[in-house]
Amino acid sequence: MSKNGLFLTIVWICIAAVVYYLADNIQNPNKLGALGSGTEVSLQRGLDGHYRAEALINGQKVNVLVDTGATGVAISQAVADKLNLKSVSAIRSSTANGDTVSYLVRLNSVKIGGIEAKNVSASIVPTLQGDVLLGMSFLGRMDVRLYKGEMTIKPAS
Image (cartoon, rainbow, N blue to C red; front, top):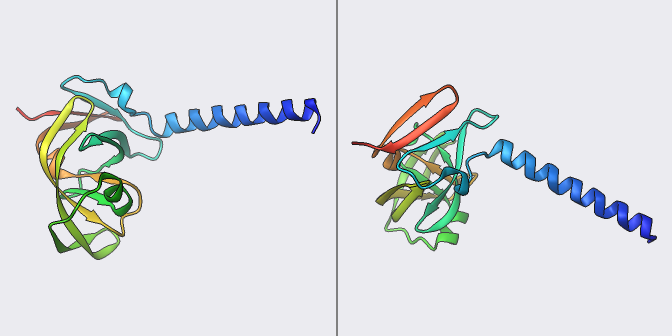
């Protein structure tokens, strides 16, 4: 390969990396660093209308979809393996995709920005596509407000 061809290849790789970075920040604007450490977190809605964020579960970074319609925190098998979670019992659950078996677990902590809840009930759902649904077993402890494409979460007083 000539020097000119190598240079063009490097330029195209850099352009692709920049496009990927920009697209990821547009689709997932709520990164850990941007959420801060205050007692109130503001999430921006993604282009698809959902609220996604990076959170810490048991101190490890995971991607979550904030779901006020979910009863609890639902964790995919891949994330459960990454977090080394062990279930305490199996239960039948109803999901948007039908009935399934899930496995109950307790999370030491769930933290989004500076908001943290300890001893949160959750379930490992092996059929879950994606990472984590952050449902009401976490959100029920919070004051959650929606206004003009922004979700504000703070501890309930």
